[in-house]
Every structure is written in structure tokens, then in C-alpha cells.
View 1: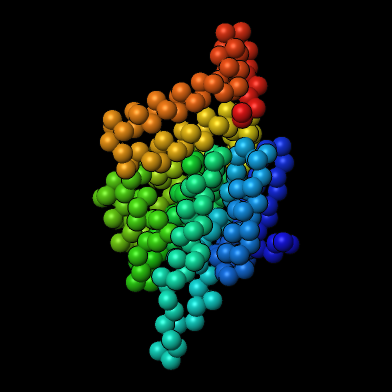
View 2: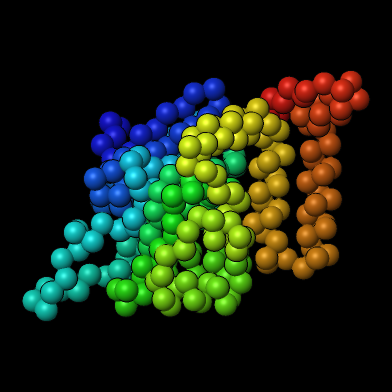
Length: 263
């Protein structure tokens, strides 16, 4: 597929998926949904990929849904917004969170609406200082979607999640870091270089161990402590036979940098 609204590049184990509608702050239309889904399929099938970088082109990361596709007036039949979640946003978020490799969101600018949920679906969010988050649903008489109402209270607590959702007020990347909403806020001038270094670090890491760690942490909310310890036991048993574990121990004992293969 020749993409018009996204850019996908895979080089040396790094997949870079860039939303590419800068004139619309990378908001989603029908074409972008189709192309993004196709890109995820390629990423899921490419065993050479060891990390995914998700970012946006231009001044914004993603402004959510392109409302120009939804003409609303008293003379039109109301759109079924639940259908959009069922067919597009829901599957997209579930697929992002289920990817076996680390997913890093390089938040280059504003994230609004479903764009917030999309960014927070990543395993690690690194934001430029200029970036901000806006849960704009309240301004439209809607509710946070695409998993936003689930993940926000878990990241920042109910009080802050409730205030963010009900007011629709923007918060800065620095505030998001302070509140535990994202991993790190980086000065605008250093953002690109530090983000790239971070992604390269993941591309050379123990990919299988990363994958199992992701699964453990994401599943922990539905398990008791005893159940979680049992899962940890199983995964430690499996990873103990991996080549990456052998390399890690060998490198540690020899005081050298490990050369992980992801196996």
C-alpha cells in the first residue's frame, strides 16, 4: 500500500510510524485509519522489528478525529460514534498495546481527544516541552474514548483524571511528567536527539525480555499478588533459557557491554 497519510520506515530493527497530516494536526480521517491499520499489520508480521517509534509530522502529534468528516446539523442523521470506536479506535488501541516490542511515543506536539489515548497506549511516552494534552471531549458533550477513561485514572489517579476529563483544560508536558502521566519531558532543542538515542537503545536490548515485561505489567491490574508472582515465576523460568540472558550474565561478569539479539 502506498501511504498518503502516514509514513512507515523500518531500518535496523527500528520501525518509525509517523502520522502525516500536518495541515490538520494529524487528526484521523477514514484514509488514515485504513493506512494505520495496514501499517500495524506489517509491524506485527515483521520479526526484525525490535522497537516501534510512534510520532507525528509537523507541529502536532494527533488531534484525534477529523470532525470535518462528520457534518452535524439538525437536518442530518446523527452519526453512530460507537461504530467508530468499534471499527477503528478500539481495535487500534488494542493492537498498539498488544505489540510484542516496546512502543515509544515521541510526542512532538499537541495531543487532543483520541490522540491522547493513542499516545498513552504506548509503553513509554517521551514528550517535547512544547507538547500538551487536551481531553477535548467535554467541549463536545462526549466522554473520553479509545481507552482514555481506563488508562488515565491508573496513571494519575481519579482526582486528576476527573478534572482533566470534565474541564477539557490543557496540561503541559511538564505537568504530565510531574503527574506520572508520561515517562519524560525533554527540552525542545534536545527532544529529537534524545528520543533517537532512547529508541536506538531499545533496538539493541533484550527484546524478548521487554515483551514479557510488558505483558506482566499490563496484565497486573486483573491479577492478585499471588497470581502475579506465579506469572513472574513462569516467565523467569522461560527467559532463563534464552540466549539474551546468557549474554547478559556473561557480559556482566566480563564487565563488557552485552550484545543482545532479542532471542
